[in-house]
Length: 94
Image (tube, rainbow, N blue to C red; front, side, top):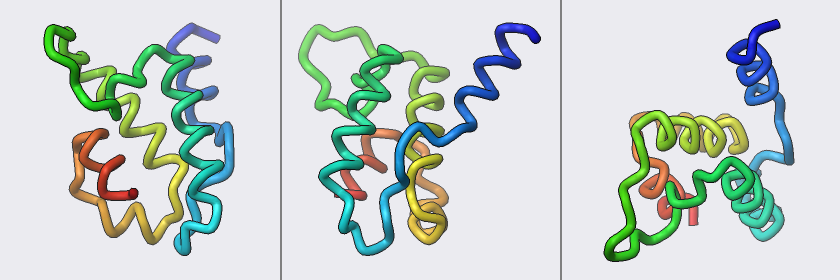
């Protein structure tokens, strides 16, 4: 198995529960998502940009977006189908 294949397999598994449609698990989901993105070094994708910080690369933004979308209820995915910025999706889900 190549590194790319193993990364793809690990990324496709759910690390934590998805955000429910009614949001009853929002607090837990937020903490789980923050930890997941932080461990990958891409927490900046949802954080408020700070002056002087280098922008996150497009692949990193897409990875963050994939993680968020992989951990939200299917109806929420449909509602935000065309949202392609992880920070905008993060703010919309709040």
